[in-house]
Structure formats: structure tokens, C-alpha cells
Length: 356
Image 1 (tube, one colour):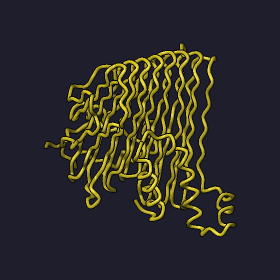
Image 2: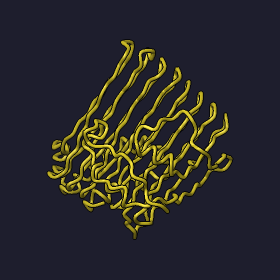
Image 3: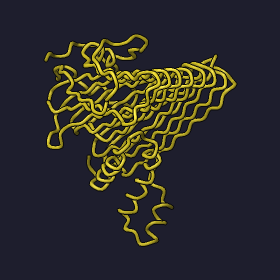
């Protein structure tokens, strides 16, 4: 292990870091360490460790640090192969005072199909102070169908600053999904570029912060070819003194005529001390498009609460049912397989306990 070299850190004066807690981070407190990574259910696939492929950007200092210190796992899906069971990639973080830099690369061949679930976890009886800086790069070749899900179940002293990059080629179907329940400060930037005619991309996220947690999401839906489609649905809740931030950009380039792009962000504030920010943005360079964005921040709908309470349901139970119903729309769209029930139970437990 070695101490991280000094770098020029971003500040909240930069728009992409606005509302964040980045100025609290002191990199000198961490020593680098290799990720402890396991891969399950990858039968028939090529899994290897290689250098970073070309064609992906390094948008900030954390992506650069990942490129310098990464532990890379590459999953290659042959053309025309359909992988039935989800591939499970797990990164275990149990050491304190370390910074890890896992990188996952998914290359799906032409007309292939695969689901990959990437989990970030700490042991139930440990809560180390650590920094996790993951990068995932997904390439969906022509007509490929790729489902990716990141699940953050980190301890309450862990910082996570991640970057997801997705590239969809002609007639591909790409989904990038995230569930964020853990961490002290957890930030995820997701850049998805649909770069071939007929390509489609979906971005979905569920995030729930309690106590003093903060969840921070930045997304880009980049349409770089004609007749492409993207859809985004992010839903979050905050309780206690927790905070959340969502900023999203739909970018439609001049040559991307016939594009349809949609963006929705909904947030529930469950206590007076909680706070959520939602900032949708559009950058459209051509007229021949269908495009919309919507965002809301507010408490539970009182009509829904009253309806349940009027039928004899306890107020705390009524609130629990409303929140779980709010998240069910996202849970139904996650490529989580058998993990959906576990994720729903974790949301319910967090809501019931009022803590992480």
C-alpha cells in the first residue's frame, strides 16, 4: 500500500460539483489498496485483467486516479451469446484507512445479451473509514442487449465517488441502473452515449439516505446518432438530516434527428431536517426531436396518507406503505433478478429504523 499522491481537487465552485461535499475529502488520509473482488456465474464468458481500453473519457481527477491505481475486471460476451443468469461482481471493503479503485469493463458482442450486477459491500459487523472510487465501462455492440446494476451497501463511514460510462451502438439496448443505500457520501456520475441509429438506453436509480448521509447523482444522456431513444427514472428519499442531489443533462447533437429523450426525477423528504435538490437540464441542437424532463421534491402526499389512515392503518405503517409504493416503480425495472426482494426488505428496514 502507498499514500495517494497530492492532486488538484475539484471544488463546489464548479457546476458539476455544486451542492456536493467534495471539499470535506482529504485524500492524504488514505493508502491505496487493491480491490477484493469476486465474480460469480460467469460460465462461458471470458473474464480477465487488462489495461484500460481506448475510447472512454477521464472527466475528473477521480477517474484519473482510478486509471492510475485500478484493479480491473473485464467481462467479454461473445457475439450472439445469450447469458441466462446474472453475472455477480462483488467488491468487499473491510479495511479502514484505504482507498480502492475497482474497474469493471463489460464488452458485449454483436447481438449478445447479458445482465451484470456489481455489488459494493462491507461486512455487517464492520464499518471501516474508507474511500471507494469505482469506474464501470460498458460497450453494447450492434443489436446487443446489456443490463447493468450497481448496488451500494457500504458502511456508514465509507465514501464512494464513482463513474459509470455506457456506449450503445446501432440497434443496441442498454440499461444502467443503481441502488444506493449505503455510504457516508456516495456520488455516482453516469454518462450514457447512444452512438448508433436505433440505439436505446435506459437509466434507473433508487436512492435512500438517512441520518447524515448524502447521495449525489449526476447523469448525461448523450444522443450522438439519429433515431435514438433514452429514458431516465431516478427516485430518492431522505430522512433524518440526510441530503440528496440530482443533476441531469439531456444532450441531443445536431445530427441526432428523430431522437426521443425523457428524464424524470422524483424525491421524497421524510423529515424536517432532510433536504433534496433536483436540477434537470436540456441541450438540444436540432428541432426534429421529442424531449421532456420533470422533477419534484416534497413530502409524502397527504391524500395518500389520509386514505390509508382512514381505513384504520397506523400512521407510521401508512408512511411506510406510501414510501415502498413510491419505490416499487423503480424496483420493477431493476435487472436485479432474485435480489429484488432483498432490496425491498433493505429499504423497508431502513425506513422502519430511521437509520442506515
